[in-house]
Length: 202
Image 1 (cartoon, rainbow, N blue to C red):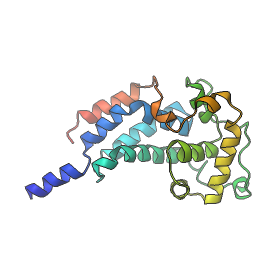
Image 2: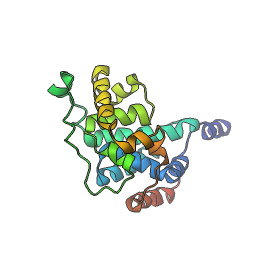
Image 3: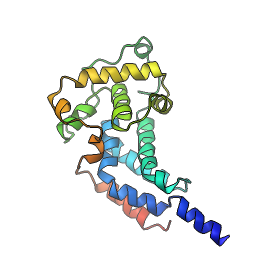
Image 4: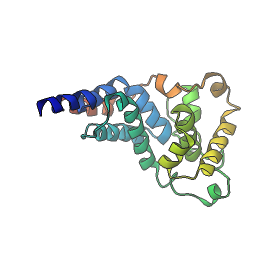
């Protein structure tokens, strides 16, 4: 029994492992949530919800723990924006996306130009682009996560690319690792959540 328990500790990530990941990757995980939700309060809620979900006893192999943490934050963001992005609108069904002039990003978000450009995309385009390009999910994975057809995913992603292509900032600075390399300043609620979890035995 002791040997089995030891093997499980070696194979699976613990609550402490996830706390360490959320602490080390705090800025990139928060920025991922912020870009997806385009809302500071929702981004903090997604980060905290992701941390709580990951430390609640899910059996995840240690080598997958970091990517699992990002996936959980993404799923929290999807839930926080639903039904805006999860219900198919007549426009999406006919292959037409939201107007380029309709943005959900808060005007006071203090973000680098390339991140701000993503946050200002309409919600559907934003999720489609970030999941496909920044996070590297396949079309099949994106469609499953978002509850869309592949056709609607491709339509939204193409619309995002069309809106971003004329931006000098995105053309020169947007990279696949943009969300993972960005620094940020938003730590209050996040640090409190981490402190509480780190103080709790795994």
